[in-house]
Length: 420
Ligand SMILES: *[C@@H]1O[C@H](CO)[C@@H](O)[C@H](O)[C@H]1NC(C)=O
Ligand SMILES: *[C@@H]1O[C@H](CO)[C@@H](O)[C@H](O)[C@H]1NC(C)=O
Ligand SMILES: *[C@@H]1O[C@H](CO)[C@@H](O)[C@H](O)[C@H]1NC(C)=O
Ligand SMILES: *[C@@H]1O[C@H](CO)[C@@H](O)[C@H](O)[C@H]1NC(C)=O
Ligand SMILES: *[C@@H]1O[C@H](CO)[C@@H](O)[C@H](O)[C@H]1NC(C)=O
Ligand SMILES: *[C@@H]1O[C@H](CO)[C@@H](O)[C@H](O)[C@H]1NC(C)=O
Ligand SMILES: *[C@@H]1O[C@H](CO)[C@@H](O)[C@H](O)[C@H]1NC(C)=O
Ligand SMILES: *[C@@H]1O[C@H](CO)[C@@H](O)[C@H](O)[C@H]1NC(C)=O
Image (cartoon, rainbow, N blue to C red; front, side, top):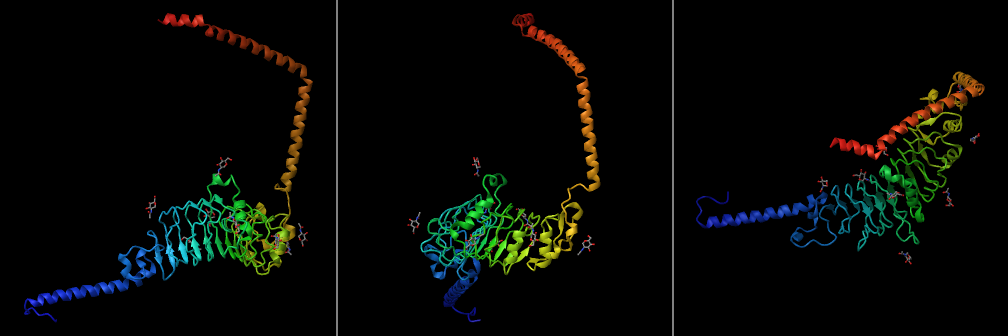
């Protein structure tokens, strides 16, 4: 120990100085260790120099409710109830998570900054209760490659949301991956406007998404795929249409998707694939198609698809596909069917059918006899009708009489007077 107890009064001074030195040292150590721990992901404290902590924050630094990491070039504003996009996003941002907020509306140029956020490559806007995305909402983001708009109740997606507000120019969008899963508008509001049409229009507009490689449209309750929804996406490699309500692909066209590698159609309401669709899928050189969990109907429309399934290498897990209808075919494996199994019998089995025909004839006979009896008895019926009419008339007259007595003001006065 450097300081003994036997030292004079000067020793106290020295100890004080030593303590001060230790404090300064401690401060320096903690301040140098701060940026390294902060760089992982803490809030506005991640300014490059600790000396700047006393100075006013520069514009374009970390906005207060967010967590920024310059090292990872990431800004996270997660579950913060934000109602608009923060104005002062740091210019280095490459990954922006703006999830679980309450943005509601994304106006034109929502991310346009000066200077522009040139490095922003991945933008996650999932779960923001977004109802409206305006034309040009993603303008001035020249490096935007991945956009996630999932889990938003979109009822108003502008056709020019991805193509820029100036539709006459329609510069290509830099987007490569677009996630539009679970855009569930409230049931009442989606009846007004076709959700399918709205999404298709945004995918088509201005041929802007020609660079898109991945498109996810899962869990959207899509009932159909508009004919030209995919026509302007020639670069598409991965298309996810899982967990929708697609009944048929007859009107959809995959013809131009020559780069398509995966097509997910699991969990839809597909009943059969027709020749046209089969030929289109077969013509795509690299595609893998996923068809599980669809209610295949194994009737006389099915043989073309079964024949194709037996030949093709395109369908993944084709041995798992089974019939859902008709009842007698349920759980039969599609690949194991042969054309003698597949017919379009009416739903009734033949034995029941003949008995229904017989029942029909009997009912018709009974009806005819009834009419004949009526005809033969027409005089009696006429008399009977007259009797009924007379009886009614008598009854009505009696009723009328009583009613008039009740309505007679003199009588009512009389009764009220007698009360007094
Ligand atoms: C967001 O709002 C909800 C409900 O209004 C509230 O419970 C929650 O604490 C808010 N979160 C923040 C980060 O303010
Ligand atoms: C966007 O954020 C949500 C919620 O955190 C997450 O589930 C999703 O995977 C993210 N999207 C992408 C493309 O990473
Ligand atoms: C669209 O772009 C063209 C050419 O750059 C320009 O002349 C026109 O004024 C723009 N229109 C709007 C509405 O910004
Ligand atoms: C739906 O249509 C009705 C009448 O056509 C209109 O009053 C209502 O505002 C529409 N709702 C939406 C969400 O567009
Ligand atoms: C399928 O989509 C519906 C809504 O469209 C959703 O409620 C459900 O959770 C989804 N199922 C799966 C397995 O993703
Ligand atoms: C396929 O692409 C050609 C030219 O790129 C276009 O003219 C045609 O309309 C497209 N067809 C479909 C069905 O998308
Ligand atoms: C489908 O194509 C096959 C072979 O190309 C043909 O035999 C069959 O008749 C076609 N089916 C229909 C419904 O046109
Ligand atoms: C077709 O099905 C019948 C009975 O369902 C069976 O006897 C026959 O072997 C099957 N033919 C082929 C080629 O599988």
